[in-house]
Length: 232
Ligand SMILES: NC(=O)c1ccc[n+]([C@@H]2O[C@H](COP(=O)([O-])OP(=O)(O)OC[C@H]3O[C@@H](n4cnc5c(N)ncnc54)[C@H](OP(=O)(O)O)[C@@H]3O)[C@@H](O)[C@H]2O)c1
Image (tube, protein in one colour):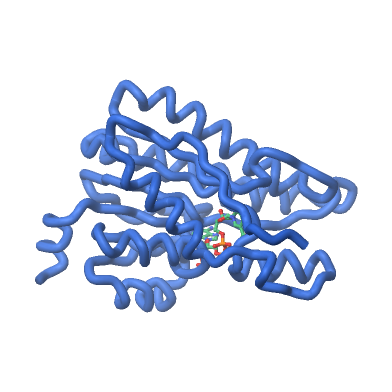
């Protein structure tokens, strides 16, 4: 089957941040049923994921600096998983850090969504934003990351109401600690030893997104939290 035939016969999902971590697990799961546009900055890493999927194409670019790669005219699912985690106490965090985190976790999500809205409306599609438990609460050292995820939650709440009349559904998925590069870097910064018992496999988050995607069009999973069973 050619790529064009695959694209024509399957619904299309764009997953950002799919070169690794949670986004990769989501791309692999959606790849069972969808033609997947695999997002990431590193073309070789993205191609490695594309090659494992039955129907996929690369979507390579830095979403904070653009230009955003070309989008299909009809898009069934847009999953925003690309994101960064940085920042410490407010006293120790300079403006560049705030800018980097909000650029990736908020502004890039807003701009890609804006560009994709015509294609999402054409499909009566679904937007899934991979948020975080940090999108609900903030503690010491969490102002930057939580701030960006609170903003992302406000974005999804507003988008959901704006696009409701157009049949576009919007979901916010809130994972707790998940076993990825980001989590390992965070635990190292916390000065703790990494213990995978306290982090879920990325596949568990992908299964959550699958529930959201498989919901019939008459219902929307608006917000969903998933956390590891064991806590440190
Ligand atoms: N891991 C956790 O414990 C956890 C918990 C709650 C929520 N989350 C959220 O889940 C999402 C995925 O996190 P993860 O743990 O999978 O992170 P990760 O392993 O660090 O992977 C991050 C992904 O985002 C992509 N990315 C980062 N900046 C980008 C940019 N400017 N343009 C395009 N792509 C960019 C990376 O692409 P490259 O490969 O090109 O760098 C990579 O594919 C994030 O939104 C994160 O906030 C994670």
